[in-house]
Amino acid sequence: MSMEPQLVKSAERTVRILEALAASHETLTLSELQQCTGFPRSSLHALMRTLVELNWVETDSARSAFGIGPHALLTGTAYLDKDPALPLAQETLEDLRAEIGQTAHFARRDEAHVLYLATRESREAHHVIPRVGRRLPAHVTALGQVLLAQLTDDEVAALLPDPLPALTDHSITDVAKLIGELDQVRTRGWAYEREQGTPGVACVAVAVDYRIPATDAISCSMPASLPPAEVERITEAIIRHTRKLAATLRREGIR
Image (cartoon, rainbow, N blue to C red; front, top):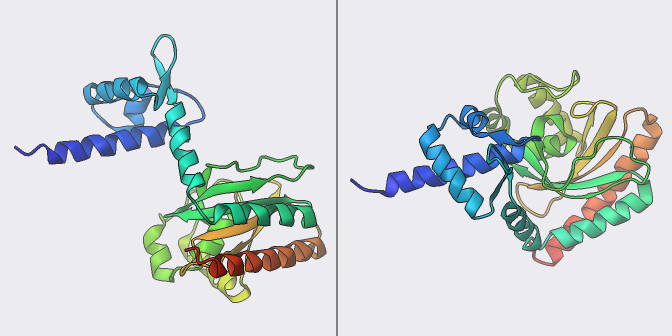
């Protein structure tokens, strides 16, 4: 009997465990991990022992609860360090924040989610800001919507669950309704969402057109109470700075 299928299964289980721990705000017991993953307790126990010994997972003194370990951070940082677009995107976020005074983000689509790679927070920010490394469902964020708009309607429908999970009362939960919104995004060239991901927060996003289809976008988070004229000013600034970034990335040959 070949060992290859078993090795692949072990690798997949290891990744699923790390993803479950990373997604949880609290440490998880072995029983909770078993509920999350559905893996047999015997193999789960052996994998956890190995991950703890390798510093990918931390455990409390009683070894009864587990959390993500420091080596996971090293790997995530290595991903950021090797991205040639990121330093230029960070400069753009600095310039954008200086001009509009609001929080700016740079993110990349990860299948049906967006992954935040850089954030520059407004000094007056009083709301919860997605931090670097946080992953959110694409359909509830302007970043995600502007990147989903790069896909065809069929590709979007195949990628997303239906109904869509809601984060707030304003979240779009119907795929057909989302596809209608994406058509508007394509027409105007930017995405706008109001309190779909976070109560009290609105967001405008523009895709960074240096890859086809675009994988990255820049956005600005702002209080949902801002008047339309201010939202328009912010939108114009994001479009201008994002186009400049895309031109620089293309000129530098970054793909």
